[in-house]
Image 1 (cartoon, rainbow, N blue to C red):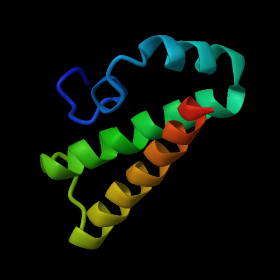
Image 2 (cartoon, one colour):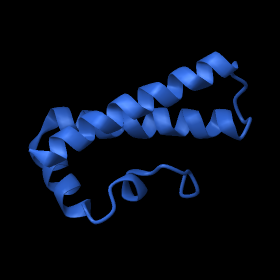
Image 3 (cartoon, one colour):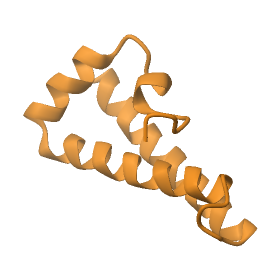
Image 4 (tube, rainbow, N blue to C red):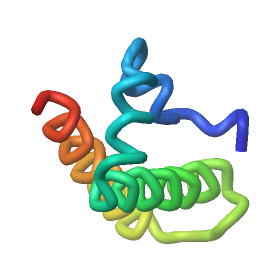
Length: 78
């Protein structure tokens, strides 16, 4: 979704080249990117009430997104 907040481009501005390079050279990193997008979409759908989730489920999704984002940040710093 193009209007989904917290896209990787927003979260890591100016690092598109690094993200692309790692995505093509590191399968684990590429998997993290897919996971991030999937979880981020779930969070967005829950927040906009397209998918009904409990507050706890929504919070768990946000925490999962944050953990994945942290892993992406660590990989980008290497």
